Image 1 (tube, rainbow, N blue to C red):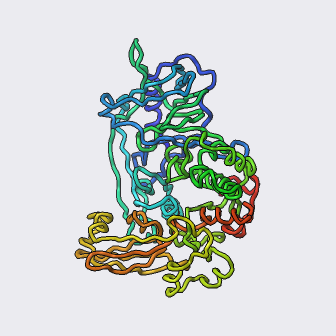
Image 2: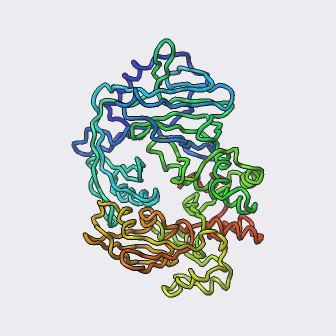
Image 3: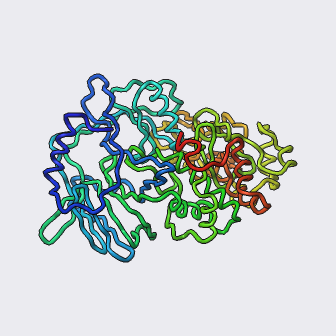
Length: 529
């Protein structure tokens, strides 16, 4: 969200006074879209919902470039800036070139950027309503839709867990799912944390966004990245190191880390299509912070692109700029490690309406499908978990699993805010068509709570999936027998590897897991929904 009209000119004036103009950069930062419009004018609102950021340019067929944060939430609190260790950037041979927003330009093999306490022209109050936390972006997005349907400019953010933010005067959203907390945040600040270079003649303040060019690559977290890069201030008052990476190069850093480099070619090609489609579809994931995607498991794992061998590069080249498209453009190209023999429907993992190409089905040959039709009967689930080895991908190491949960483990996972006390009973309240647990009740000495959908695994993190049976094992202990690893919707990576080994093509594998979709060039079905 943008600063309100009376605040923005003062901050711009402060920036002009703080940051002297040096020599103009030969190539400045890439153009960014204008900041979002000001906060909606709710009665009595005189503050910001969050620090304003510029939106990244959209990923399109004409400009297939992603803004990926290699690191986020960088920087100390302003009062701790002087004692905080600097942000160190090192080139992989050759010079790094730093160009700040005022045109100052510096070159060196490595750069130590020190944190700087910056006073604002006047106090700024950050005020917002906060809904959450959510176990996933998908669930946060569904909840944000409740506010947006009322005309509220809701924003999805991730300070630690996923949250939905709305202006302080926004009305309560209607139809909130059970267990969600609606709170408020308010803080008045008079300073922010900035960056500076320290030279022999004194400190040189740097104006953001800061562009960094690394012809030989940038060394970061045991990897080498080609860039170019930007240091951007975020919605929380910190900074992010963001790489502007072409979409096809991004896949070189994703595909081998998501499915492995040694799998059959058709599985690699299917994974390349899905990783590309997912990135395009989810490019709004971190717009609140000024970039498209993160580099960890909250997005797709993006690591050193040099890890892509010849087979991975060939799979990417063979599917160049191809995406899976449905009625609303690029699809929800979700995938997971193993579905345990039965695929999950979208609504078994997240809040939201059904998705036509993400349905539950037995994932195996015809005799297996006939034996375990969906909706899976309650009596069939133990049988599936006991002897479902005919399914595709049954050689995954977590195709079948067992876990033991104790009252102490559950209490620690829930935390005191749930008000359950010492857990005394676990009860499955509802299952989906694939047999996955939709609602798990925890009863305790002080109350009860219900974990639903993706919140089950987010809370009880030792569970590989929600496809499990449950039985007591003495006082304060429960035995869980389950199958699969991940949410279970969309492509099962181990299933795809199995099918590719049986001679299936990438197109056939994708049609199997996403029926009714089509493979098209980026932009042919719309760049994003």
